[in-house]
Length: 231
Image (tube, rainbow, N blue to C red):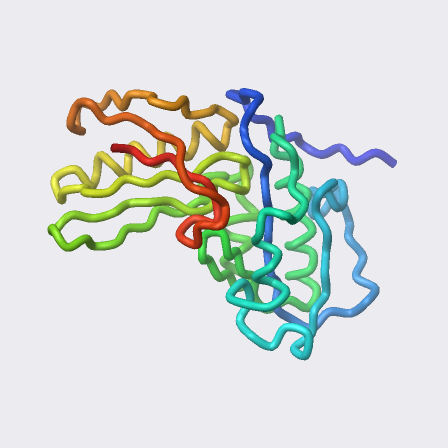
C-alpha cells in the first residue's frame, strides 16, 4: 500500500548543485527484527544512496567519525544523493533514524554539525516539528582570531548538497549581522537555491564590497564539505 506522506519540497531549487550526503550514528542495543512503520515515522524506506550498518564495540571501539570505519564514511568516495530536487530523502532518513532511536537507541550523533541528541532532544528538535525545522540541520560556529576578530563558519550544509559558509575577520560590531546573513543563506540553500560565484552581499549593517567565493573540498576537516568564503 502506498504511503500518504507529506513531501518536503525545495521551492527555490536550482539544478547544478552538489550531491547531498547524510550520516548519523545511533548508539544503543538493537534487536535484529525492528519493524519500521512508515506512516508513524514518515518514511518511505531507505533512500537510494543511503545504507544502514550495524557495528559493535569490537568493530568500532573508538568514538565515531574520528578514526576507523566510521571516519572513512565521511570521505567523498562514499555514496550520496545526486543534486536532490526535494528533501524527501532527508525525511525518510530521519524517520528511519527515529525508529531505531525509539527501539533500543540511547543517543544519536550528527557528526556533520558535531551534534549529540538523546531521544527527547532528537524528537523535540528534529523529528516532531511539523513543518520540519530544517535550519536545525546546520550550525553556525565561531573561533577567536589573534586580531580580536572572529572567524564564523557553518557545518551541515552538505546534507543538502550545498556549500558551507565562512567569513574571517568579523569585528564585534558586525557579529549580529553576519549571523543574520548566514541564517539567510542557510535557509536559501536548504530550499535549493545556489550561491553564485562573486555574488555581492547587500546588507546595510555590513561593510560594502563583500562577495562570495567557492573554495575548499570535502577533505577539509573544518567543514567536511566545500564552502563559500565571504570576503
